[in-house]
Amino acid sequence: MNHPDFLPAATRFFIVPSLIVAMLCNTIMNAFRGMSSGVEPVSDTRDSNQGRFVSAQAVAERAGVSRSAVSRAFTPGASIAPATLAQVQEAAAALGYQVNDLARGLLANRSRLVGLVTSDADAPFQAQMVAAISHALIERTNVPAIISIGPTADDIANASCQLLRYRAEATVFLSGSPPASLLELTRRNGQPLILVNRAETGLDSVHCDDRDGAQQAFEALRLAGACRFAVVNRANPSLSFSVREHAFVEFAAASGFETKIVRAGRADYDGGKEAARQLLASGPAPDAVFCVDDLMAFGTLDHLRGAGLRVPNDVSVIGFDDIPMATWSSYRLTTLRQDPRRIARDVISILDRRLAEPDSPPISLYFPVELVVRETVRARR
Image 1 (cartoon, one colour):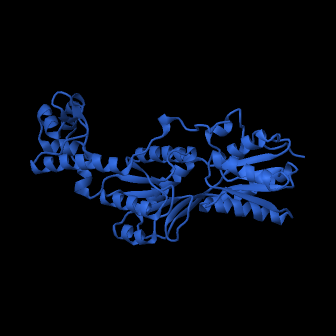
Image 2: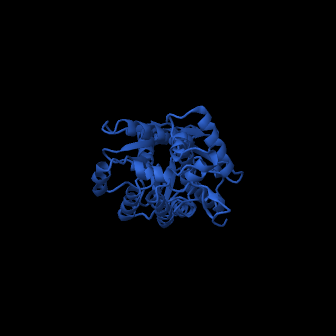
Image 3: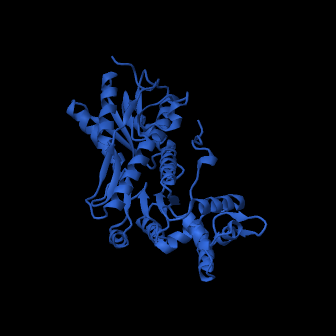
């Protein structure tokens, strides 16, 4: 089987740093021009007849009110007569006017941007998390700025500093952890940092319960009658992957079983195939394999089947994440499910609490994972 293209191109979305810079710089220049002329900076809706954004001044002129009345009409809680408000709203709708939130952010020294930093924006589970968190941020009236980075600490630091320069309200790390040198800088600037499925002393974080997931996987495989266990992981695992591996080995050992560990270069489909090759070349085939993510499980399944082993009759396989492809008829993978929407809710909860209480102790939220039983684990014996 060829390496499958697991994620359609239409769902591979991210904004690289250079694009963010270009967009913001252009808008900021327009905003300052508007301020210097004494007129509110242009808004976010273009007037096709004039080739520029519709201004608040244009709304004021059409409604027959003052420029300040337009400003009050679009400021929550501001004092404005109902009749005047109706006039402004009617004129704004007719012209297609939208408030220039960037200009307001400049005046308030905040942009409503929230950075989402990831090194794997096109990986299926990362894409699910990015989509869920982005949706939750938009509902909160934030603007998600999605930055795809390289794997080094410098890449992470550069992305973080860029978001600081544009007064991002917060940064959410879906990959990597900010270097220690950055923490004091963000603290002085009052920007919250939130980590997802990774740990850093003194920072807010959201985690799935990796240990419990590993325990559920072991118990399901043991109940299926397995006695030769293996774990498939990557060579340089993340914190979550390490916890899953070590917890599985611990639970197996507590029941009197050894676990063979195989590692591949990447935690993807090809990595799973590579790990399965190692498994079959290093001695008797296991009868139970726990993979630290679903992509590795898919590669493992295909290699085992290609080698003539029957799944689940000869060997049971469990993955982790429950990405959409786990339901495909060619896999029907038993796996541990993380809920991206739950992750997004927890991120928003931490953000709200941190902004309300900047000096409170670090917040760590743990969410459960659920074993989803399909067709890659034998029935109980």
